[in-house]
Image (cartoon, rainbow, N blue to C red; front, side, top):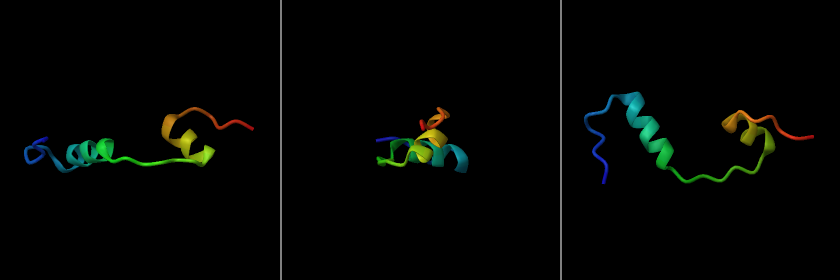
Length: 40
């Protein structure tokens, strides 16, 4: 369990987002998230 009550709104969002499972299939989305350019 993580105590999020003491964090500000932006830190709380980052913590929750980092722990949210998600699936990304689109090469453009992967490039946007990782900063690595999408292949041809």
